[in-house]
Image 1 (cartoon, rainbow, N blue to C red):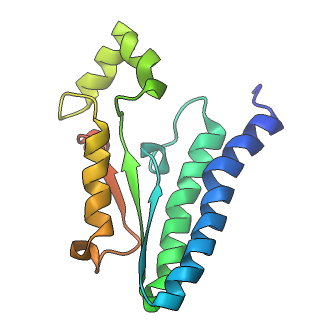
Image 2 (cartoon, rainbow, N blue to C red):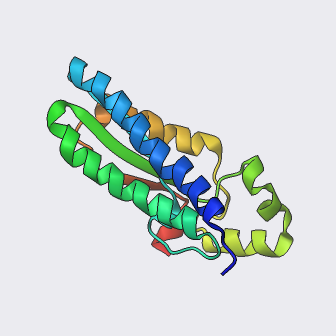
Image 3 (cartoon, rainbow, N blue to C red):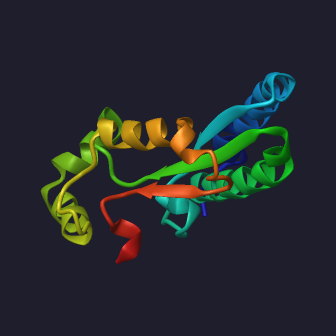
Length: 151
């Protein structure tokens, strides 16, 4: 109820507006060469509602939609557009959650893999989506979440 318009705009601009215009600029160059790969960063909240993060949830849902829309428009021009939806990853941004014994336990208990993800887990997905092994993968949102969404 206390979420401000400034907070809303900052997150939407960062996560959605910037993604769209950077992708558009990159696609122009890729179209001229006849191929390219765009990999967006979505979130588990692309698929779930979240709590107390309305602009983040809306923006990451938008990332999923834009990924599919761009894939539809640009596939015939040789551009693959996909996204990675990370789960709980060990970063400085999640340090407070990891340090909270109760919340950390709740999170890990819900993840079938039984652990937080590591940066290299995301890297492996990015390498795949950027490689020729993914030439026929388009408009996909690849969850890298240790099974979180499967629960």
